[in-house]
Length: 71
Image 1: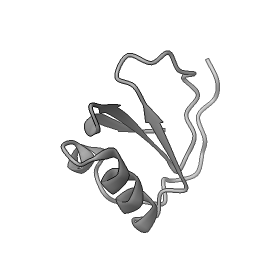
Image 2 (image 1 turned 30 degrees about the vertical axis):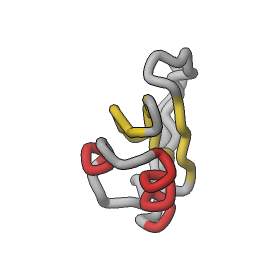
Image 3 (image 1 turned 60 degrees about the vertical axis):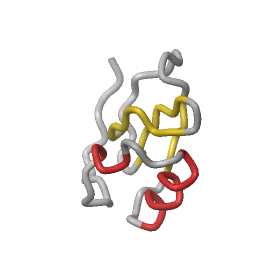
Image 4 (image 1 turned 90 degrees about the vertical axis):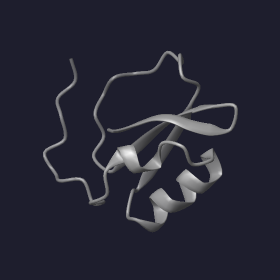
């Protein structure tokens, strides 16, 4: 397992607040709130599991965010 980043996340909003937004709205809001990287994924996408400080992951299905998490 890759080591976790030691720095704090720059954004202070909670990922759950992005659920229900369109993918474009969520990405725009994330950058406006200080996230440095936004990764948009299909709900069942195979992804790497390294934790990156400042990254917000958006699972988007049919144009709507269905899950969101840090790292």
